[in-house]
Length: 87
Image (cartoon, rainbow, N blue to C red; front, side, top):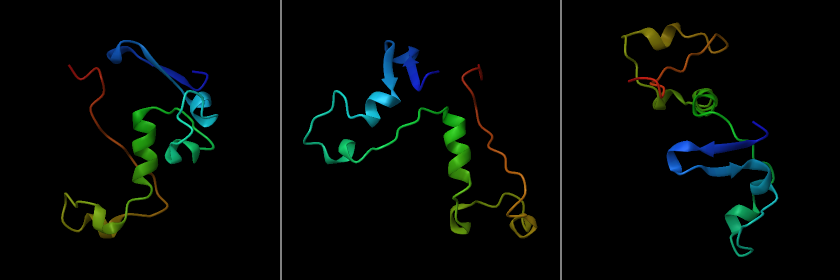
């Protein structure tokens, strides 16, 4: 919310995307942080979904023989994984 997240499992550390983009509280000698122009905080599954869209054929493990040939590159995609409520 508001490009911020409070990490409840890390003693309520707040990560602020706007502060990161403005390089607040960063060392002026850090070339990596200085290169960040935009920082948007997103959910981990949203990030995985975007990552799935960039996978190359050699980065995919075929679970059902012949299934890769049936994939429509413009068709729907799914990202499945365990959430925090898994148990």
